[in-house]
Each structure stands twice: as C-alpha cells, then as structure tokens.
Length: 200
View 1 (cartoon, one colour):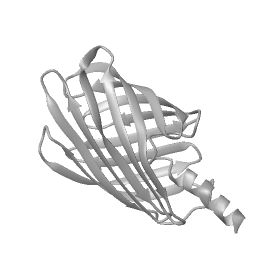
View 2 (view 1 turned 135 degrees about the vertical axis):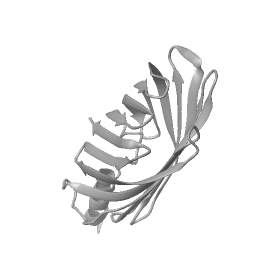
View 3 (view 1 turned 90 degrees about the vertical axis):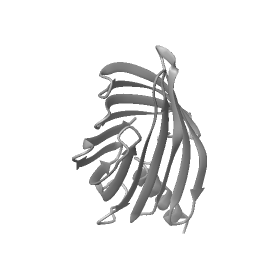
C-alpha cells in the first residue's frame, strides 16, 4: 500500500507539470509563450513550494513595445485526494521601468489521471489602459501513461480579452515528458497559442 501511495505522489508531480506556476523547493522553471497578445520568456525560482519569484521579458504585440516584469506567485490553496489535486494561485507582476504598469490575478487547476481543468484570470493596469485577460480549459488524456512516459492531453480552451470583447474557443494539444512540456493551439482570433516549459 505504501509503495502505491508513493508511486501516486510521484505521478501527480509528473502530470502536474503545467499546472504549477511554482516549482518544487529550490527549483527553477524557464517558459516561453507566444500568442496574439505577446511573445515572452519567463524564468522563475521557487524558494519553497508556496511561492515563486521571477522575471518575464516580453514583446507586447498590441502596443509594439518590449518590457520586463518582476513577477510573484503564491499558492493560496492545494487540496490532494487519492485521485486528484486542486491548486489555486495568486499571481502578480510589476514592470521594471514603469511602476504604474502592473497586473494581478488568479489561476487554478484541478486534475486526475484522466481529466484536466484550469482557469486563468489576469487584470492589467497601465497609465492609460486597463484590461482583463482570461481563459478556461478542459482536457482529457487519451491514454494513461506511467511515470516517465510521454503524456498527452487533448483540450478545449475558451479565451477572452476585454480589448476585443469576444470569446474565442479552440482546440489545444499538450505533450510532456519528465521536465519538458509543449502546448499548442490555434484559432482565427488568437492565431497560434504556444507554451514551452522546462524545469530544472
């Protein structure tokens, strides 16, 4: 029984790779994002499993400028059961060269070996513009891999940015193995929505 519990804990750590914007204690994460709004590189370090601090350097495709954020993420709640895990995070960032430009929001996820759901809500404040960006995602693993296998999720994502006031719904596929993750989706409105991540 103890071996099964230990194996389940290791498995949850592997399948929860994407869901956690906080790494294991003393762990680092490097991410790259590309979508209709931005292209960015984001590095964060987690002194503990409760929070992470990092830097995101991004190209803003709407305003056609480049800038960087100091970011902070805090785990508000984690609930584990024998078959699932739920996480809720507070996220925030402030621009290095303009303290009036900042964001804050919530992110959450719930998953089993078969099902995955997550949401992200972010409110952006600048000198002359405020807007929200949010998405909701649900996914299914077409097969159940073991620890160390290549894992696959087929998902549906609904995204809305208050600047265009419309919802966009599109398919997303996610692959991960070990510490490496690749996620990609496409829609007419959002174009390519790509996420790469590596933990070390």
